[in-house]
Amino acid sequence: MASWVSASIAAEMWKMSINEIDDRIKRGEIESKDVGGFLFVNIDSASSQEAAHEARLTPPTYSIVTREEERALLETMSIASARELVSKLRRRPIAA
Image (cartoon, rainbow, N blue to C red; front, side, top):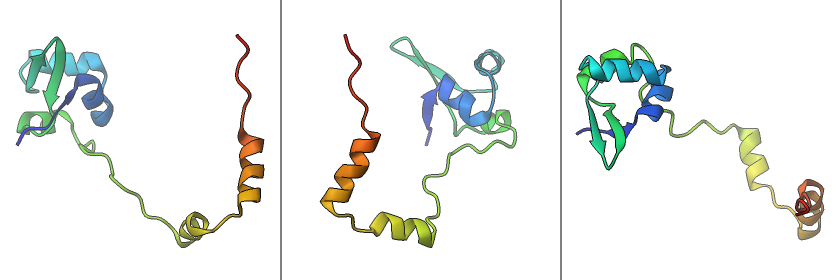
């Protein structure tokens, strides 16, 4: 099953420039299609995997949460302390 993404996303995933992606499309190394004026490339085709060299094709979907991070996320905070924290981080609107 094909996975189609924009050329710029494929370039970022494969750590290549957009120009290099375009060159490889022209040489037929990467499968592509045009939909409504937008260029998409297939990141699952065998030729595109070769084009990616050893770059990771899919970004990690999650990261491991440490015990400290878990405790911090689950820590309850009083409304008063939450409001105080938010008031320190809040910025006023830019004057028009």
